[in-house]
Amino acid sequence: MIGKDLERAAALLRAGKIVAIPTETVYGLGGNALDPGAVAEIFAVKQRPSFDPLIVHLGDPAEISHYAADFPASLQDLAAAFMPGPLTILLPKKNVIPDLVTAGSSRVALRVPGHPLTSQLLGMLDFPLAAPSANPFGYISPTRAAHVAQQLGERIPYILDGGPCQVGLESTIVGLEGGEITVFRKGGVSIEQIEAVVGAVQVKAHSSSNPQAPGMLKSHYAPRIPLVLGRVEDYLEKYGVDRLGSITFQHRIDQIPEAHQVCLSPAGDYKEAAQNLFAGMRRLDSLDLDLIVAELLPEKDLGRAINDRLRRAAA
Ligand code: TXA
Ligand code: MG
Image 1 (cartoon, rainbow, N blue to C red):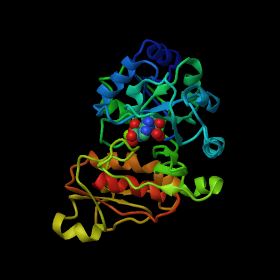
Image 2: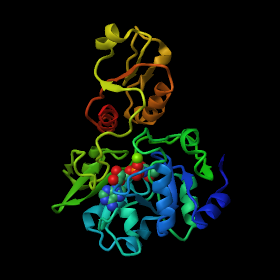
Image 3: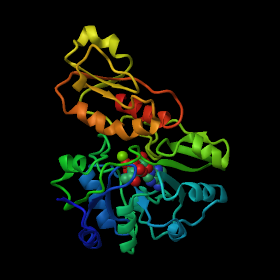
């Protein structure tokens, strides 16, 4: 069931149940982070391998000290700049966080979402919420309540509807590695924004060989229809104009039907492009097509995180 009833969502969560929650990035599949039973249910509903840890969502940055054993000053500066917001910080965990949440890692991923409904909900609860994106493992993340309902509606008792997600890409994950601030997953806070606060940072490329590292599984965010990176024009002859879908940044492809195209932002606005990415991928994936061809954006601003998602959708 979909609705805006905070009391109902809170009651279900207090009873150890799973509720889909809106955030500014993507919808999450939330449960009591301190209750291993609720956390196990999240893994089961999402069909997520237990080696892939969950982000813990807090109502207020002041709560970070309840769950993190240490909070280095450089990361505190990022928290001050971007929380609440699309930033997740990896910190050494306190024992109160169950090992199941962190997949056995000594670090916990903490985030303070910036969506008013979920902020209110977290304020009503006396525990934080573990929440992965509310999609079946490996599929495109949901940016509308209806996306969650389509795939997981039967498996969860309630979806809290907070409207379309304003950022549209998952949070940026940062932590320390070798004493340096490191971005482990590109996301809703751009590298440029982070570097404006703390100076140059390392950006970790993802690999499929080390699933303990965050957001790093290579094939992810993937539609059902095969997706390749490139120029639509190069595939027209082989596939035929009616069998192709396209994802472009600003321009339209004259040769293929309008309904088979996703133009992320005709005005060339990265924020708008990020908002439209996952919903556009889902729309194309619902059509009868043989191939989706996606064009990469310039490697700047949120274009870098969008390209990261497109590359993984193509992997
Ligand atoms: O924007 C977001 O971050 C969304 C919303 C719902 O908050 N959540 C999200 O969760 O994207 P999920 O589970 O789809 O992706 C979280 C990523 C995973 O790749 C996981 O490996 C990494 O964060 N992660 C979580 N906890 C970690 C930890 N303790 N150490 C390393 N990586 C961690
Ligand atoms: Mg996810």
